[in-house]
Length: 182
Image (cartoon, rainbow, N blue to C red; front, side, top):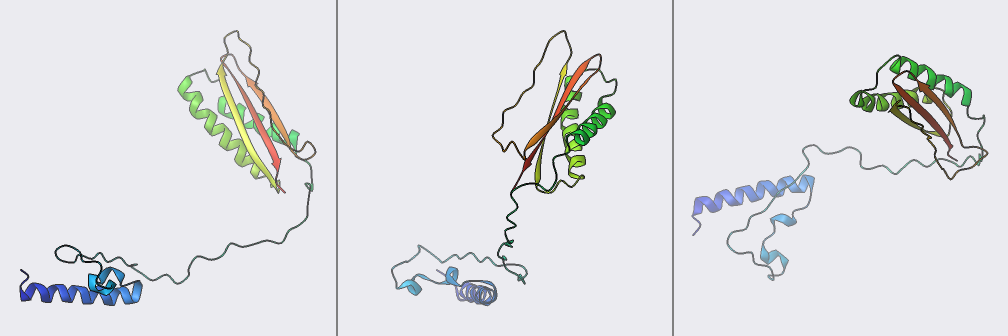
């Protein structure tokens, strides 16, 4: 049995929540079973959950910006294969130097070289080319290796550039793919 003071506290909480919801949302969570035509009657007392925004947003989700089509079907300039090979050579020689092969070191260095090459190629501002950089590092132990890839692309605008590095302990192969995005 609900006492008068508990009912008064419940009514005050319900009124406060209703005022907040008027400002920030919907009051449907405060309605009782009779507000829905009497069909819904929750067991026991009514418990409502009030959710609202702490601060009102000034701007709602804006529609995406649409750009006019350029009808440009090919790149303005060709992919600079030689310049990208120079970037890969510089990064790999500075990172690997006379380093001995250690699996954990090579695992981390592969990621670092890949990100470094990719960021330096992006600094060349190649326009609509998407840049993908793959780096393989392995141990030299009288074995041979052949790194290859297959891609479905436009032979006139898409291309790749590779560089191979070796020292007495390890080998590294870096490949940068330039995919033209219309």
